[in-house]
Length: 95
Image (cartoon, rainbow, N blue to C red; front, side, top):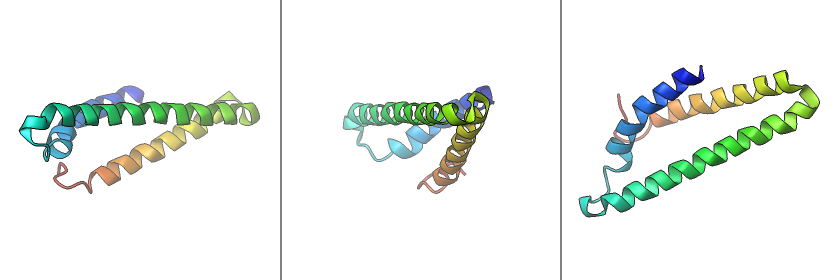
């Protein structure tokens, strides 16, 4: 499942970055726009890992490892589905 998710993210990230995020950045400031985009992306990915890890650790004491992992993975799937739905609403999104 994670391999499929990683492959899908890899295939979507470059077109999403080039067509939507950096399309409004002037060519003279493309490096700055790319730097801001990558910094923001890395920051939110680390926050997502921290949030899911905290959720898992807080649930594992009361539910056990297996059920905590199931709940955490369910939350991850819901947020991934929300990202798919919301990304379709971006201006210039891939159709």
